[in-house]
Image 1 (cartoon, one colour):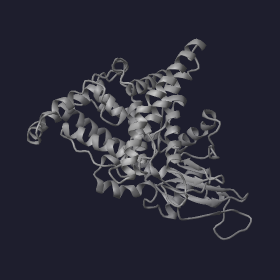
Image 2 (cartoon, rainbow, N blue to C red; image 1 turned 180 degrees about the vertical axis):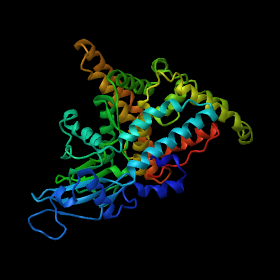
Image 3 (tube, rainbow, N blue to C red; image 1 turned 120 degrees about the horizontal axis):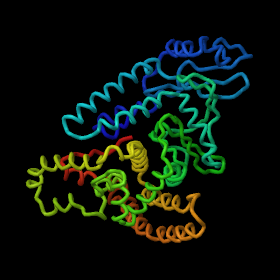
Image 4 (cartoon, helix red, strand yellow; image 1 turned 45 degrees about the vertical axis):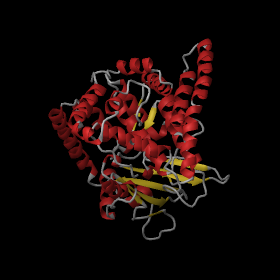
Length: 438
């Protein structure tokens, strides 16, 4: 669930679903274990609930509980501490009904508003269903060491059924922030670096980085370490699409409108300006700016009269973004989800980093590091990358201006300003944008 699309009151209420949702009772947990293994938890994990010193121990009460699963702490007989992730008993049935309801609602919405959302249902449903398959999650986590040597993956036992994963190494950390004396800049830089590398270099993107899926730890050297959990929701980006997406980001930050139009037209998109704004998560200032120009000079009363027409224009714009459904990359749905949540995380921490600059730098770097580039072409691209880094200095000037204003109490951070711009832009289309609570 992406609570950012809900009204603030619901966002606050549903924030509990990240790690403090209602738990299944132990009898329900024990039933899930027996259904999957055909034997009780004591035999599966080699634990004892009666204090047998020759066996391990396990807590019946979960230490964290989300909407799909809950996590129990255990100490095995060999002394290892592990986190046992157990799917809630109702999920296996509920997810099928949820996806069926999603399918019906999307069909009705598509017919009533004449927006071709229904064609996206199979891709979204497949990813959502895989999110409840813990074998799929274990496979994704196991791939991490092959993607990047410096990253450390949690030890995991892959020999267990799809509703239960007992082999996770137990790591201690803190959710959200507070009390560790860490640099928020360092924490958010690590987060944005990670997902940028996944998008532009590795091709496997984690699409559920909400606060309940992060732990922040202080290392012995005083540096911050981020632990990313819950690897059920990923999208794969093919090399050609990944290359196009990197080119798009570079073009967006240099106002290369010809390249933007060419790339999005290849994807079947007919409205480059609006698509650019959706990608940057802020109004794009480098295109034709048809919407903002239409609103310039209008009074509030005139804008109100135009609200219906602008809402019609919004529906038309969405149809233009989806364009040719056969060519539109489905991966963009979940890429946008990842970027929106990361933006919200940065905003929640006070906008300590220039997220857009970091993302753009990784996009440019990926174009240089393409393995199939001839040496001469790689040298040329490296030179362009250096020039691009200088171009991004203008973004830094704006970022630090907002930081100074923020420290003086004159306004919010860069993400707050982006949120405000989006709200103004959205009103032009007759929609209301709310701040994001995470």
